[in-house]
Amino acid sequence: MKLIMKEWKLCMHPTGYLMPLLAVLVLVPGYPYGVCCFYVGLAIFFICLTAREDHDAGYTLMLPVSRRDAVRGRILFCAALEAANLMLMGMFILIRNVIGSLPNPAGLDAGVALIGDGMIIFALFNRVFFPVYYKDILKPGKAFACAAAAVFLWIVLEIVATHTVPFFRDILDRPDPMYMKEKLLFTLAGLALFLAGTARGVRLSAERFEAADLSL
Amino acid sequence: MATERNSPLEVRGLNKEYPAFTLRDVSFSLTPGSITGFIGRNGAGKTTSINSILSFVHPDGGEISFFGLPWKEHEREIKERIGFVSAGMTYHTRKKLKAITAVTRSFYPAWDGKAYDKYMTAFGLDGEKTPAELSNGMKIKYALALALSHGAELLILDEPTSGLDPVSREELVEIFLRLKDEGRTVFFSTHITSDLEKCADRILFLQRGCLKADDTLDGFRDAWRIVECAGEIPQALMSSARGASRTRDGYTVLVRREDADSFENREASLEEILIHLEKEADRT
Image 1 (cartoon, each protein chain N blue to C red):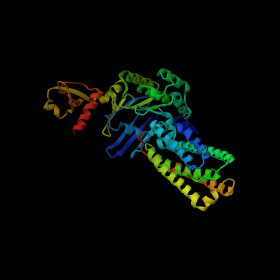
Image 2: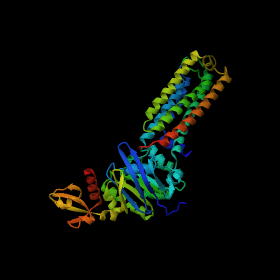
Image 3: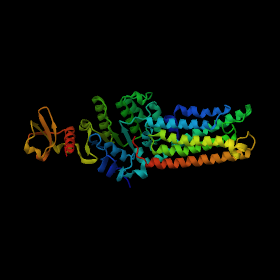
Image 4: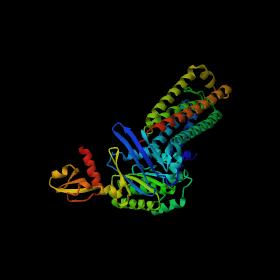
């Protein structure tokens, strides 16, 4: 908890406040809503970039914490931003459904399944970004390029799937509350993937950070 | 079982190999309540040694213990008892000092708020300022205030006086002496040897990754003499002369005390010893 507070008080970048709010974009008709999650990944990149410029690793590693603790603190803090983004997204989906939802040609509609889709995006991001980042914390750009490639590939596949794959096209991409059971199962699967991807990201990142020679 | 009489820092056979540099078999042990100067020219391996000691980099070999405790099993406890200050590293430069302090103190159960206020006042620091607004000397003092407020018994400082003006360096040296009076151990690397002449009890001399000397300040200085030669270096001196250094009137050479009696000689300063030994190393 102390490390999460440290991340918030010392490492937070203004985009960390702004980007989760872009969940509001689910109110925009005809928009690839998965991109709302990508923006949070951009904020995480800026947080890591700022941490590098501020020599945060040198500061953190002289506190009475281990490298593993430091990794866990940063990733949990970022996961909290992702969770905030998804909660806001849920809120705006409700609003969207109240004011009336039109079919979205650019991927999933603004519905429950979109939350599951967001979790899959964050699972991918956390699984790819952090292990690459913690291999060399001086190169967050490389980690972001890898994670962005993975996330955009998924977003493209998801958009294509809403036009071609029956499960996506005929069930997930239908207006709520149609097929709610299937959508909730998809969202639960997304949650499981999010937890598994993030946990794996933490483990791999900690191993790599512990093995790294740091030039601080 | 570790006791208070254990050395604050003991290093045995430290090795670290890089493609262009190797740290070889560095061993030393610090005496509690003393000031130890870690000297050597730029690139000698001082920062690599400190980074290895603090586990920023992983040594290829060697044993490191603090207060008799190995780092791996006691990292948290050790970190609560040491402080690290590096002139080249300034953290969170746009945050107010009070914000950095508020975060830092939450990690230390033994944080002493009164001591922190005392050091902030003594060092003339304002919590409303950011590190970016501080001079290099004040940044070092702030880092020291943080370390001292969590009760650090051992202070490891990497080039704390480099880049400082003579008055600021003098202030820091006086602070180190006060810390020693309080019973704290100070270990600091520097290539500004005049600072050590004023405060160090011991000298560790690192040259090209090897520890060439581990002695008291007086012992290290007394082992050498300077011979000033008007014009060329006499033939009789050639075999014992180390690192001829050109001067306006001729040369100075460094000679071991036992070889110096036949020549007119004088006391060598730390700086002169360092320069001549490095020149000798360059020559050979």
